[in-house]
Image 1: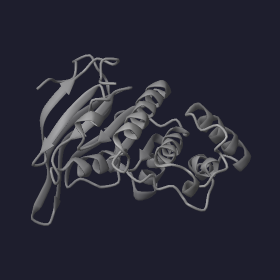
Image 2: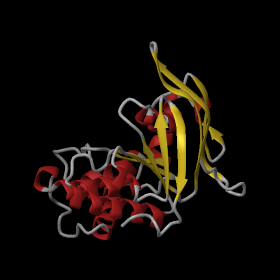
Image 3: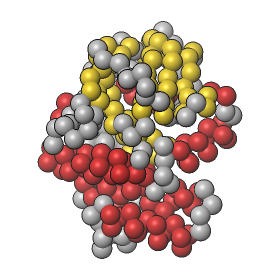
Image 4: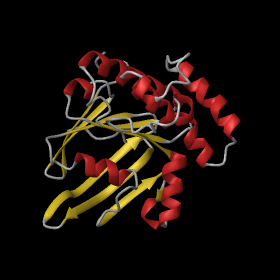
Length: 238
């Protein structure tokens, strides 16, 4: 197992994370640092605790014990309203099935996060169209999710995750509903776009090919990190 360089200042830091569901322990004391601009794949078998780890890092779940800090700020000290604002302003999310709103166009889906933060509709839509164009979806801004392919819909989800300039993007099985070729295209877009935006990326996946797109991979088993491997940026599999 390798550890983070001593000089690295973590953007996201977890210490001693414990989370249980009744008699089942999902996290058994996890320590983890995520550096600025790092892409991290969280792997492990079903039921290992990897999704619980992602949701705890993202402030969706509150740990039973331990701490999560974003840029040194303790997330557990925030009330529910403050945690909700943290997720909207500082975190972006990409889910397995995109979770786009079917009644909205691609541009409207992407514009929704900044609008929830107070940006005007016109300004948010302009910014959304710019993001969609940058991710290869120029001309598709007015299509609804049902008019997009699976890969195109995930590109919309990536644009939605990045439009607010988040510190960290969390992706939970982002290629799980896609074929291998389309999944590779989405991972290239996701890793390249987050890196260009200066965001850190945390990807939960059971797929080794997906994990290979990230500069660092950890394996979770029985609620603990049991392996930690790094690949220099640019050497991860393509």
